[in-house]
Length: 286
Image (cartoon, rainbow, N blue to C red; front, side, top):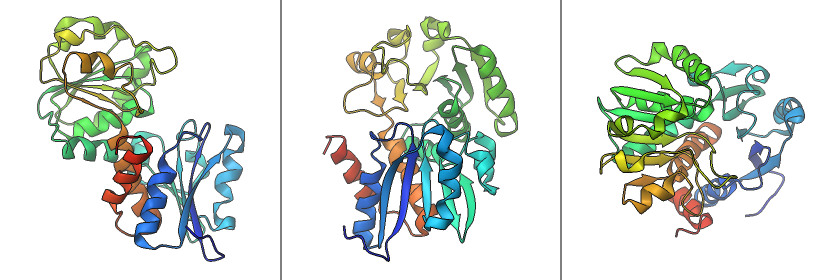
């Protein structure tokens, strides 16, 4: 990749950000399309977020992705919000359009696209979602769009789950949502009903353990999906793999939300096969 005075930049802002695989995907896409653009990663501390985003027009940065912990805090900084961003209460993309900053969120659409392309169907069936934060909100919206008959959201703080479910009521037509504590994960009767179990938390990544979950009680066809991606099986997925259950991690969601962001930034169709190959190579899966 050659950088010149004509090169325009896109980027990801995060804290931390060194682990991000987005540069590998986006830069592979730019090279494949012969675009004079490059994608960078910036470590932006929370206290610097406002200044960093407001600097995009002056630096002629085309757009940026936002990751932890910036997705909710960036909302007041941008001038315009998509309906998707308003629904989710968070943004993972800031697009610079002639100096005007637009906020959007591709997380739910990225997850929905990955579930569909993987042949995962939840029509009129029960989905169990662990977590009621931003990732949980994206999972809730994606599964409702896929026609889930029921969703049980389990969270350490039940009140937070209830508030999230209530906020999403207008978008949950035909999907019944219940909220419970993490103890529901240990209830065999709950797992016996599940067609899909989604982990929307970072639980276990640093401690090495996940909450007690009755994997054995889930039907043989029940799918376990971790929105986190890693080189090795996560603490959430490892027991499911040991039992021979179908499993997916968040790499597919990352790919699809990244492709959607690429199209928002560059106004061209993303070369998703190229981006997939770059991501899988970075994960050591090629």
